[in-house]
Structures are given as structure tokens and as C-alpha cells.
Length: 293
Image: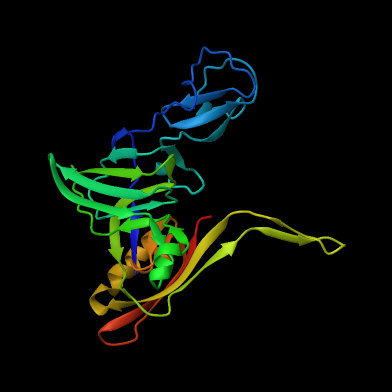
């Protein structure tokens, strides 16, 4: 069981991106905007919509009377630490950031065929990983050729060497548009070895209703992952693990129940945790994780 504590990506950390920030014209205080007009506020990388016609000198992010925030710009959607906002562009989509010291990188809600993460430091490549985002549901040769294809949507790397000067470059390849919902780079915390009995599932927010005549309709909505896990914690690390878990009680992080299963990769919070001092050399940590929808 591990989790990655995200580093907030700021303008100072941003290096480059193949995605243009051209969602709308940049906000101009002297422009007369019509109702429904869009403007890009580059200082916050957000798109705003005009709700009252006219001209105002007040920045949209502090002028709720005349503007409403639509969301992040396409380029910055993957960096806003929120689910439901996605950066989309024709493949290959490439971006580079300098997140500072850390050891883990995760990408969620990915659409693409291949994903590559490369780290350079001082002009030298210190790390590179390339993974395929498509697999086949197969246990035999027939399934290999004719089985249903499964698209991987989340990837985490917990062995990424990042110094204060490292540049992390990500490339998502694929035919047509590719996308990434959340990019996380930061510190990896190892809770301990995951015990067998890991429970994975979802909470579905879809609404199913049946009328007086027995006809059922379904309104599909989002869902959130959930996970219940138990990990063995070495006696010498109990205090460290407890403090680290408490420090992220109000912070969404990337949880990795097991690196063998993409399904156990969840971006969200722990609902509760408990550490049972079970044995002289090892303790047992129980966690309930709730993902963001």
C-alpha cells in the first residue's frame, strides 16, 4: 500500500505543452462583453462566462456579479487536482514540468494508446518508462487474438527520481484525440505490504426510477471508486505512517492498493484508518479509501 502526495503545479514549474491555451480571447478590461461571451484569465488559467453585458475593470475571478467561472483552460485542466476536468488534444500530447523533489508520478483518466514518462536532469536522461494503454482480456491463445480489448485509464510510477532541477516530460500517443484528466507528481509514502483481502468497488451515483406502470428509466451519472485495504507496517515505522496519514486527512492523494492492479489506483481521501499493534515486530493498518467522482 502506497500513496503519492501531490505537488501543486504552478506557473514557475510549467515548462512546455503541445496544448495551446486558446480556449477564448484573453480577458481585456476595456472590452464590452455580451451576455454569454467567454474570456480567458491567464493569471488563473480559467475560462469565465459573462452573465451581465458591459465593461468592467474588475478581474473576473473576483467579480461574481458579472462573471461565472466555466472551468480551467484545456491546457491546465490536468493540473487542477480535480476530477471531471480533462485536457484533450490531438495525439501526441506532450508536456513538461519541473515539480521539484519527489519520487512518484501518476496519470488518471487517460485516453491513448501509449504513455511515456521521461525525466531529465542537467541535460541527461535519468529515467524513462513507456507503457501500452491497451490490453486484451485473455487467458489463452483464442482470447489473445479475439478477446475483448481493455483500455487502461490510470498509471502510476513509484520509482521516479526527481530532484529540484529535474524536468518531467509526459507523452500520450494515440490516433485522433488523446487526453489526461489528472497529472500528479510528488512524494511517495510506503504504508506497508498490502495484505490479501483487498476489497475494490465503486459507488454509483446513477439514478434508477420506476413509474406507476412499471417502466424503469436510468439516468447515468458519475461514479466513485472505493477501496478497503489492510497493510502490514513494520514496528519502526508505525509513528511515521500514522503521522503521514494524518497529514493528508483533507488532501486528495493517489492511493495505490497494489501495483499489480490498476483498479486499486484511486484519487481521493481516506474515510478512516486504524493501526492495530498486533505483534512485536509488525502492526496492521486498516484503511477505507473513497475516490473522487
